[in-house]
Amino acid sequence: MKVKYFAWVRERVGKAEETIEPPASVRTVEDLIAWLSGRGETYAHAFETPKVIRAAIDHAHVRPDAAIAGAREIAFFPPMTGG
Amino acid sequence: MSCPVTIRIQNADFDIAREIAALTASRTDIGAVVSFSGICRGDKQDAKIAALTLEHYPGMAEEEIGRHVDEAVARWPLHGVTVIHRVGRLTPGENIVLVLTASVHRQAAFQAAEFLMDYLKTSAPFWKKEESPIGTGWVEAHARDDQALERWTKS
Image 1 (cartoon, each protein chain N blue to C red):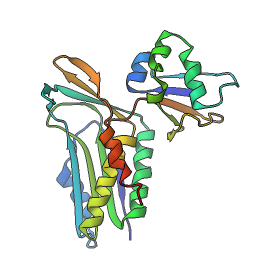
Image 2 (cartoon, one colour):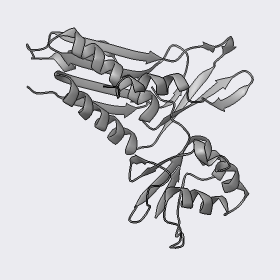
Image 3 (tube, one colour):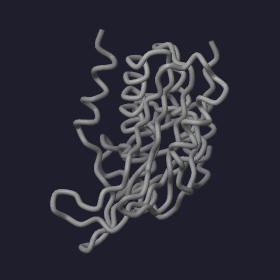
Image 4 (cartoon, chains in turn red, orange):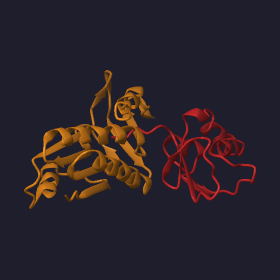
C-alpha cells in the first residue's frame, strides 16, 4: 500500500510518500503507526505522540481503530490548519 | 432548483467580484450571496509574520470540501456554492480562502457559509507554516475551531 505524509509528519519522516508492506499482524491504523515507529529514528520522531496524528484511508478521515485491509492509500498528518 | 458547485485549489489569487458574478450570472432566483474571505495577517499576538506557506493533500482536499458542500446543500436551500482555497507561499494582505453561498434569502446563505468555514478549518487537509523573524514553524490547531464545529452537530 502507498503511504503519504504531510506537514511536520512529512518533514520528520523525511519523505512525502512511500510504498510499504506491513505484516498481516498490522490490522488497524494504530497498529500501522506503531509498526512505522519501529522503522527508525525519523519515524519514531514523527509518530512519538500518536494521539495527535490524524489519518485518512483513500482520501477519507478515519479513526485509529479503523481497519487497513484493502486500503490503497493511507495518509498521516497533524491536525489541520486551513481556512 | 439547480445548485452549481465550484471547488478550486490554486496558487493564484482570486477575484471576489468575478466569482460572485460567475455564481449569479443569468440567474434570477438568487436573492442573497454571502461572501467570506480569509486573509493572511501580518502579526499574531505581537509577533510579526512574514509569510504563510500552505500545504494540502491533493485529491483528498477537493473531495473533503466536496463532502461538506454536499452536506450544506442537503441542509440549506442553496442556489450555488463556490469554495476556493489557495496553496503555496502567501504574504500578509493576500487572500487565502473564499467561500460564496447563494440562496433565496440571507439566512441560509449566512449559515451555510459559516458551516463550510468551520469544516474547512478543522477537516479539510490543509496545513499552514508561518515564517517570522524568529524562524519558521507549523501553525497549531486551535481548540476554538473544534468548538465552533460542535454547534452544527447539536440538535
